[in-house]
Structure formats: structure tokens, C-alpha cells
Length: 160
Image 1 (cartoon, rainbow, N blue to C red):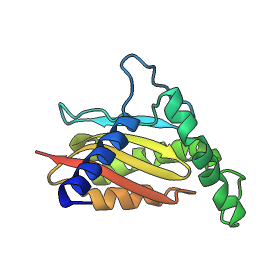
Image 2: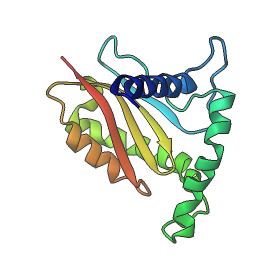
Image 3: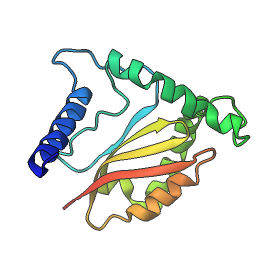
Image 4: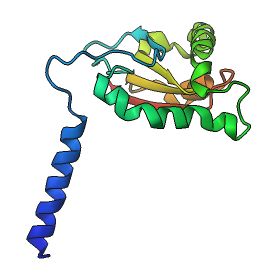
């Protein structure tokens, strides 16, 4: 295959992969897994809201096997007390809400952020905007100390 043909194939593969993840206009999005999705602060104007756990029926079906496999893997490995790691999420959402209330005095996170939390299989996905001088690492570390949280994934962006 020539260089141009190989490049064309890579471009075609990338376009097809992107198209597979696009949703059709008007197709309803829903939180089919009932994953906790919390909007916890809104101090930074014009911070775009993340999609969170919303997905189409087809995305849910495409993800179903992988979700079951991920959910049960910690039980099979003997690292979880519950049979499915997604079963922790509602409990973690309550705990993390209490933790956030106690953190505001020391970190001033409500005054310096616009944040959303998505909880899935003991992971906290942190989305939104933080001010340039906000101590994100300390905040992420504090969230990670919540009981049963396996990992906090920071997907925030800095805003002035």
C-alpha cells in the first residue's frame, strides 16, 4: 500500500470511529445505569456542563457487556464486599456530599469552581472548571479519601 493509500485508510478509520460515537439528532439521552451525577458548584460563569452518564439506547447496549464485566471484576478478584462495583455508587454519593460540605471551609472550593461529579463503579469523574489558583490536587486527594472510592479522575479545566 502506498503512503497516500495508507494515510487515506487511517483517515477513513478515524472518521468511521468518530461516526460510531455520534448520536442522531433527537435521539433521547438518559441515565440508563442510574449513575449518580451531581452538580456541586457553579461559581465560574460559562462553564459548559458535561454530558455525564447520559447516553442513547444504542450506546447503552454497546456498553452493556463491558459494564457487567467491569462491575463484577472487583468481586471476582476479592477486592469488593459487594458483588458489583456499581452497587457502591449511591452510598459513595452520600458520603462524598458530606465530605464536600466539610471541605469548603478549608479549600473554598464552592467559590472557585463549577463542578459536576459522575460516580461509576467506585470511580469519581470530576468535570468542570476551576480557577487558576485553585488547589485541584488537594481537592482530588480529599475526594479520594471518601470510603470505598477507588479512584478520582480529574477532567477539569482552568479558567481565570
